[in-house]
Amino acid sequence: MIVREAIILAAGKGSRLRLYYNLPKPIALVRKVRLFQLPILSLYFAGVKRFIVVTHKHIKKFFSRFLNKIGVEYEIAINSKVGRENGYSLNIGLDYVDEDIFFVSMCDHVFPSDLPRMMLNVMNSDIDILIAGDADPQYIDIDEATKIHVVKGKVIRIGKNLKKFNYIDAGVFIMSKHIFGLVKSVIKTRKVVKVSDIVNRAIESGYNVTVADITGVPWVDVDTANDLKNIVYGEAASLLDSILERTGDVIGSL
Image (tube, rainbow, N blue to C red; front, top):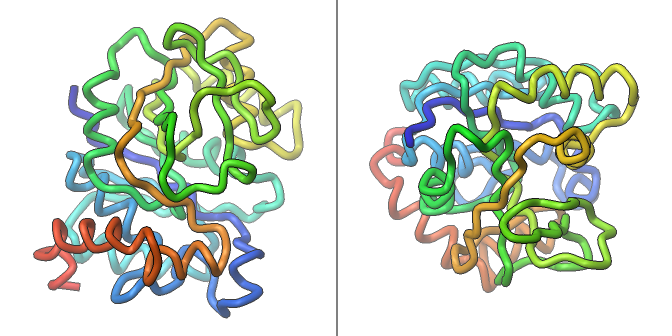
């Protein structure tokens, strides 16, 4: 399956990182690139050619400059109510979607293009939401992570406080346009909406929510200054090295 479109959720406050790093998290420097550029590049090399970025108005220019340079189609959508969380950003992004099936990625999750490619091998037209799930993450604090309870490939529940779980959410999804109405209904009934709230409502409503097992593929969720140091200098530096090496031609032109 080919998926040519992606929503990038980049409107979070990033308050834990801002305590140590005086820049909005999406544009934090990770060696010679910005944090937000890494998931975009990995999705680009997995076949995505159109990006919908939901972000703050004051950093819009960083996204537009980068997306112009790599030569893709894009829309920049502004979330002026960031307190309503990333589910609200997803709702904004859906208004710009053209394709029936599309990726959704957090801008602060760093992963190689192997991860979305593995998801594409699992995705089919019967699945409404496909979640990248890692049964044994290498660089993630499990206590802080979003957990997934899966039974026979079907997601039963997702959330940070689950007691019973067998996967960790890697922050990358493939979604179908079938969920549009559900998302709009959740947004109308809840002020603060996370993507996990939308996924759980989809499960409760009978949608097909499935996990793509990406165990063995390294990835990092950059929430804190320590996470940033880990990917630049620490254990996860090899992940960053591999991404920069595989995207050298594009990076070199920036």
